[in-house]
Length: 614
Ligand code: GCU
Image 1 (cartoon, rainbow, N blue to C red):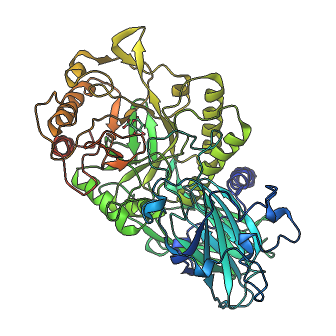
Image 2: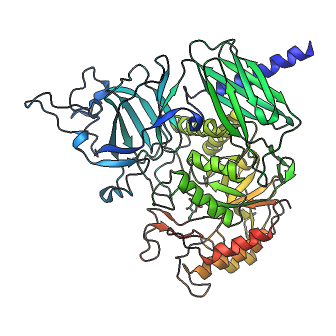
Image 3: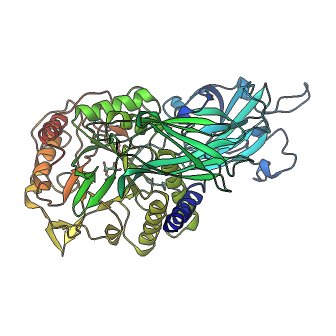
């Protein structure tokens, strides 16, 4: 009797849990291991600052018209004869690379913010006539209006998370044309909002794929350890199609000799609960990944999944129930190889190799979800990951559309990375000013995240303040600090706040009984510029800020790690000091052309001397 009751309870838990997760219509996960063809490469493009290809001269959207006419760029119109008037032609237009941003590809688009139309033509013969086909975008910054063979597929908002649309009914064997209107205009109500300290790279910035799946395919799954019982693998698998209920799905983990059959309910969801006493737990020392195979009647998908638990206990962070110190660094998603928005596995490898060389076991991916290569490589390399939603500085807290947008971007990254062992922390925001609307906004995001994923920790990069008005004692006075699992904050004593020696005058009084992470500290330095340690922009000044800060923060009892700002110099339109910044934020420990600054070795020595388990 009790057994069935518990079974029912579990299925309600898992059922509500996955209804919630699959709020995103049909988002395919793990396209890494699905049969797909790449649509990367040359795309034709048209720069359209007046959105002339989207609106008629009355500024009415063509796509709302039954007969939009030749003016609508998504029609990809061609003159029918010499008399026909068509005032654009994608095939005669210049080409641009996908994935990448337009800013670093085309000099005249370096500062461009607005609409650019992309067009890709291709032929495609399905492997099986009954199969379904989706066009999958890893990311497009910022708003993507997507059209296929002249039909609107849909719109996606948010520059750093994946989305897909089904094209099965519209697909032809030849001469298909996929058109994307990409608009990266900054807006007050957007996420992020008008002001950021990073370059607003526009374009189809990550891979584009055509993914073919069977009629009833495995759309989604969540397979992780139960945080409360590390001998239990738990989760769900979700089918999508017309015949998905009462279906058997085989969950195989050959290395653990696990072959468990689970049964889907009416919604095509099967809950997974598997016991195993032989799990080789994933950790930074031992990033062991298991091949997990899900096989249904008409579909099979493989993934490489690590099993570990991550939790807090008082002031400690526990990885597999062992205390861990997070030796981290913050990273922006810029390509250290070709510049501009990073997107390739080589970009990710270079950045994580540098982090490893620095002695890191942890990275903060700022301030938005990075590409999937990053987290999959971190899984393989045994590097723990903080992922962040681009709720940055002062967004429109009381705008419900802004909230939905922020929640949707969070849902998409959690959906994409929920099976990655390396990802341990979901960050809700960075440096947001405390107010009631903001507190409600972030608290709702945290509640949403806990529902989607009860296996990971929640945090946010908060701001520090004076303790009871005493500027030499710093504290965290922020009601959102009561909501997070890990208390994190940014501090710049020695750079924005006094000179390096000021670190010696500051003490910290953090009242929350939680693990503390310092999500940012640092200073700017122009590589190769040398002088005394009080001269701004010299490597010696930056070096001294690191020396003084590392001493100062030792005094924080709850300190369990940090991620200094930042691994590599990065582009920012806010950084205009000639001969020093020239459009770059210079707080990197490595310059944009790969040269290590003195502070790199200060931090490396500190990490090499720091045993992560104490
Ligand atoms: C802030 C912010 C970063 C910014 C950094 C800086 O703390 O979070 O995005 O780049 O400071 O000023 O360099």
